[in-house]
Amino acid sequence: MLEVSHLEKSFGSHSVLKDISFSVHPGDVVSVIGASGSGKSTMLRCINLLETPDGGSILYHGEDITARKMNVPAYRARVGMVFQSFNLFSNMTVLENCMVGQIKVAKKSKEEAREKALKFLDKVGMSAYVNAKPRQLSGGQKQRVAIARALAMEPEILLFDEPTSALDPQMVGEVLEVMTALAREGLTMIVVTHEMAFARDISSHVLFMADGVICEEGTPKQIFGQPKEEATKEFLARFR
Ligand code: ADP
Ligand code: MG
Image 1 (cartoon, helix red, strand yellow):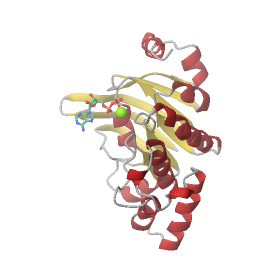
Image 2 (cartoon, rainbow, N blue to C red):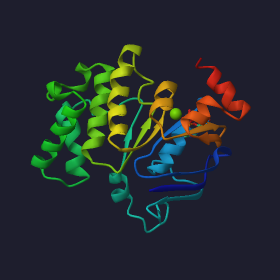
Image 3 (cartoon, helix red, strand yellow):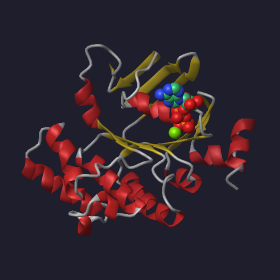
């Protein structure tokens, strides 16, 4: 579905992604772990073209998304993103938040958008809050709405950038529960996370990033059970 090859990205003279290659198959849950500053967010942002890669290629069903002739809006509609800071529209209700992209970007009718929004709000357990404004919600509830909003676009792949890092500890579980259900249903996901138990239990594949490279990758069993690289061992030791 996605093939990232020799991806490079610099900000000025600072080389942030050096030579990133990996692939994602339908139904994969790829967890990305690594220290702050290692390039995890930049990599996700390159994948949905919030950043323009400087080198390498990203093939989506065989088509290079960085090519000039690429239909970027159509591609973006296939790739959803959930941010650490929720990024809900504060002036809109929960329901409106889940409808606006469908209407403006996916050009769906209001009725269809409303139906989809309600379906996915139900799925994340937020049906009772359709008319609430984001400020009336807890962090965990906001993030579940953000996930429903992304799902309502019916993406083929969903990118999560530390979706639980801004949450109070007691709210992490409710968001991970939703993500676990999505993973079990076969949604293709790339998840940047510091939740090691989640990465270990849910991922099909784990990437450990350090200083702009994939230092080590493998199954969760390999990475968490028998890491080969010293850097991986040191990083994981912080979570014990
Ligand atoms: P991570 O998500 O792993 O914490 P990031 O991808 O956010 O890492 O950042 C990697 C490096 O790139 C950091 O040193 C960060 O300061 C730098 N960086 C990220 N975005 C920008 C930007 N827009 N301009 C300049 N530097 C950036
Ligand atoms: Mg980040």
